[in-house]
Image (tube, rainbow, N blue to C red; front, side, top):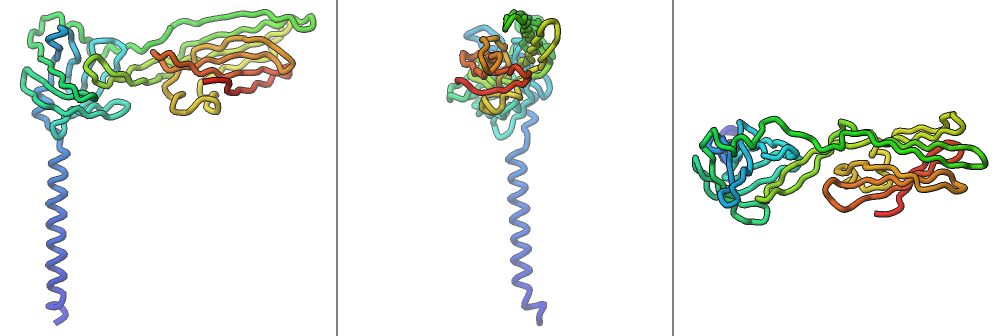
Length: 270
């Protein structure tokens, strides 16, 4: 008798499991990558009105014609072009054929691109696969200042050193597509020599300025330079400048090296 009493509960449980499985299968189909669309995306795509290459697709990666824009992995899911860069962005595809691609950018504008089938054309030559070049000054900058204090000669050396530390910054190209540019950060050294004796030396990295510059800003910023400003009873004063590449904004922090060879960092302005 107990078995018969449990039959409604068993049937209800089975129905729930069947519905759940059906829902999961639909969800998987909804999120499934469109490999046919990805295959049609392969090749060089250009703007016919501007007569310039917008991007080229090779395998799972989109390449841009300029050397500073980072190649980005992509997928086509649910009629959307998904770019898996530093931030994932989706662009609704309105039409995609072997020779035509129409999608909407982040402003809602329709972008119409055509595929260049001529393998010998200059448009193909503009796209250099795997030739991304990060932006950096690629040179060491040295500065030397002499300060006389109570008859003692103080040599202050500042050196800006390029590094291989990468900083990623997102921009939008002419078609309104988000692209990631890569820059190289710097370290800056301060060395103070008194009467031929090194009394202070330190290599400054941008992470040391986290307490004075917002973390969201500092992640996209580059330590540009440190400038000697002057001295007073507190010690030697320096201004460190840090900014996001290709923007006019700079953040400035003050470094004070005391006469007992200790340094402090403080915020002075945005």
